[in-house]
Length: 129
Ligand code: C2G
Image 1 (cartoon, rainbow, N blue to C red):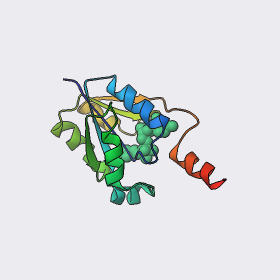
Image 2 (tube, protein in one colour):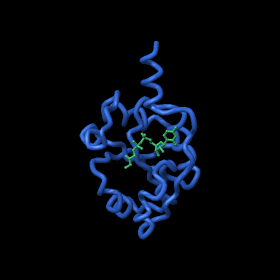
Image 3 (tube, protein in one colour):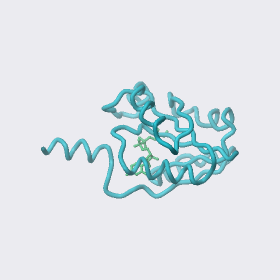
Image 4 (cartoon, rainbow, N blue to C red):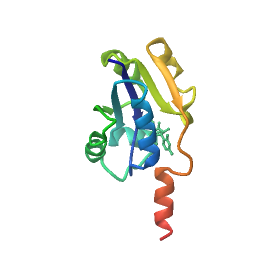
């Protein structure tokens, strides 16, 4: 069984999130998504609309997602890859190169982002109404 992992906040779920989750799953058989906790979002300087528990429920309802784990810190990725026996790490290409240190432990794949949509854009557009 080929195991894939990806990381993110996944707030205000949109088609860009669904596209990367679908394409990540297409690379293997089992997709783990590490969702940033509210505390880690504070470290990332992100204020998610949905709390971690709600974002976890939403992600677990997606057909491409097989398991959701918490992302508590930047430094957990190697341990996650080893502990979960991950074959491939996937992120959007806005992170190109940032996680190449994982190449010692698994395949690293950066996929093109979906243009024209982001959680930030959703918030900005809603503020115009
Ligand atoms: N994404 C995408 N297209 C978009 C928006 C997001 O492909 N239009 C991808 C991002 O590249 C990322 C994933 O969706 O791979 C989740 O995006 P965010 O929730 O914004 O995650 P981020 O804040 O980038 O957190 O340790 C890694 C961090 O937790 C990543």
